[in-house]
Structure formats: C-alpha cells, structure tokens
Amino acid sequence: MRTFQLSLTAMLLLGLTTMAFAQNNLDAARRQMYEDIVKQGMRYDLLNGHNANLGVVQFLGNDYFREGIGISEEQRQKIHKEVLGTSMYDHVKNELDYISLMDKLENEFNPWHPNATTETLEKFAALHMERDEMVKNKHLSLFYGNLTADQIQKVNEFHISYMSETEFVFPGMFEALGLSDEQKQQLDNVQNEIMPELDKHIEKQLVLEAKRKEKMDEILKNVTDQKERERLQFHDIDTTKKVWDALQTESNEVKESGKKLADSLKIKMFDVLTDEQWERLIKLTDDPPEYIKKLLEQQRKWKEASDDADSKPEAWAPGPNSWKPGDPIPEGYRQQRQERGRFPRVNQSE
Image (cartoon, rainbow, N blue to C red; front, side, top):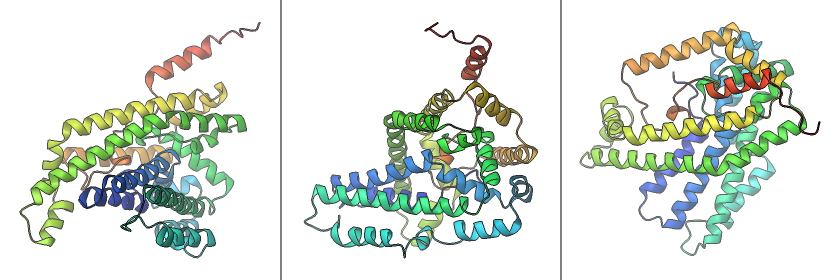
C-alpha cells in the first residue's frame, strides 16, 4: 500500500493527458484544452484536500485508526460503500445541474467537431472543469456528511499530524485550530497568491510525464502483442525501473520543485495562525495521538521496504507519488516562530 493513492478521477485526468500527447491528430489548441483540464483537476486535488481525504477513507480499514477517530464499523462500511464503492459520477448523474452540464458538453460544445473554434474549446474546458469540481465536491460531502462534528475535528487534526507524509497543506485542515472568518479568507488568499508558482510546478510534472511516456513508447515500439505491451507498461518492474533510471535527474528536479513550493505554502499559511493556534499545531505534529503515531510508523515501514526493494511506481503520477516525505514544519520557520514567541514584536503605533 502506498500513501494516499490517487483518486479515480485523478487517474482519469492523467489518462486524458496521456491521450492528448498520444494522439498526433490533435492540434495545439486541443492539446492545450486537455492540459488546462488536467491542470485544473490537479490544482483542486492538491489545494482542496480531495486526495488527502480519500486517503483517510482508506486508512479507516485499519481498526486502530478508525477507533482513534471514533468511527463505528457501521459508519466505516457506509462511508466505504458511498465514497469508494461506486463511481463518483453515479452520485450526481440524476441531478439537474449535472444533466444540464453534460448536455452542453455532449451537444453544444463539441471539441472534436471539424468546425470547432478556439472559443468552443475554451467553453468545453471550462464546463469540463465545472463538472469535475461538482463531482468531487459531492464526493467529499458523502464522506463528511457521514461524520459527526467531533469526528470531523479529529480528521482535520489527523491531517495536521500527518503533514510530513503529504505534499501540500490545504485550508480545511486548519479548521481543527478554530479559525476566524478573517483567517479563513487569509488562507484562501494565500492559495490564490501561490497559484502561478503551482501552475509552473504542474507544468513540470506534465512535461516529465510526457518524457516518461516517450521513453516507454520507445521500449514498446517493436512489441506487437497487446497483452505483452500491457504487461511491460503496467506490471513489469524492470521495464518501469529502466524508464525511471533514465529520467532520474528530471524526476529529482520535479520533486525538489514540489518540496520548495510545499514549504513556501506551509510558511505562508502558518503565518496566518495566532500564537495559541501555532502551539496547538506544534502539539499535533510533535506529539500526535497514539493511533496516528502507529499509522505513521506503519507507512514509513512500507516506504522503507519499497525503497529497499528498489521498486518504482508502476506509472508516474503527479502529487503523492512524486512527493518525498519530510519534516512537517520547515526547521528554519520553526526556529523563527519560537524566537518570535520569546521576543514579541513591538506595536509600532505605541
């Protein structure tokens, strides 16, 4: 088991990217349309905690974790069935807003029509993004709608305690610290400010994925048997390792880019917290509840075993699988915040 596997929607979005690069008959405008759709999906997943919350649903399969959150086995089964057991689209397919969006996507703005214009492609991309966000919002509501207020509090506390294992922080997790409305707005502003840098990082991920596929295609070019092609592409560790060995430098650069961006986002969001909230955050990261410590230990053992076996993900994916776990709080910022607490800033108006 790997930490926070990508959601079905995320994998579908990655499939769109692959398809966009693979089909040579797509012109530049259509490729750009696909990339815009994928980028928006990745932004949402990273900054709204969609994948992180799906990870919590998966972790509920561990009895000690489920009991630590305070979720009954009956709740777990219901959540698992509604969130993971059926397609996300099944939950919205009969809703009027979704039906209206699908009608426009399928009938009014067809990007594959020979007479499609740039405006058609832009409108299709915008509607596609709106549909995906509608589906993901519904998906998350099925999870949180089955939790009590106390259970939601513990889930958010878990996200804070688990920061070392996840890539990007998101405003929702800080709800555990009792945010004011002003602070919530400030956190939203931080996300908006960092968006240009996030887009650059996502672009690097997409470029790396294109290179990965190119090298895989080179290996498969003389393999005619379809089953063998699928085995080599998706199930053969040696082939996957060969591809990633050739891309090690580029892959490391993307990981380092993600870490710098993640640390920058953390610091900007931490700055919004009051001293009291900061102390609560430190407590959650440095001394989390036993059930979270147990999960962290288990996750790290799995990762070490994977590293020792020199295995690689079967397919490269942006987000969780491109992230190298580290300190939940950048050490330099931790020290700075401690100094700030010892020597409060003087009010300049005095």
